[in-house]
Length: 119
Ligand code: AMP
Image (cartoon, rainbow, N blue to C red):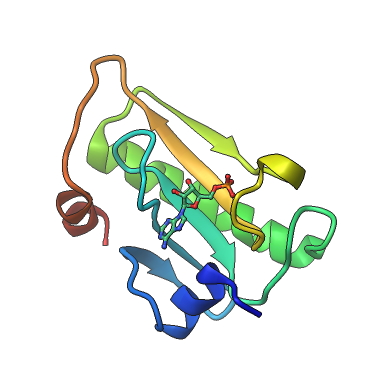
């Protein structure tokens, strides 16, 4: 299978990884919609919301709760949206939950700078 997120998990492709445990990892989106845009993915390949089991989903949302606090406290965003795409609007066919911070006044730091703050 030629899955880019599986390659990130295996370390074959670099990513700005900000969280890892036995079940999941989180890393910065390479093309962020806003500063701190993060993706949480399971290490096991599930395609989408239909495919993923509820225990893994629950684990991913536990990580989302932790990272939401960390992103808010570190980057001082004014809001944060969770998004999970399925079907034709899902670009990468490996389940992922987007955490997208929102800023009233647009703030921009490089991926490297954000990574140094959140890692
Ligand atoms: P989706 O439309 O929900 O499938 O979004 C896929 C997301 O993955 C997009 O926001 C991409 O910018 C992001 N993405 C694709 N390739 C990479 C990569 N190698 N590292 C980090 N993020 C990526």
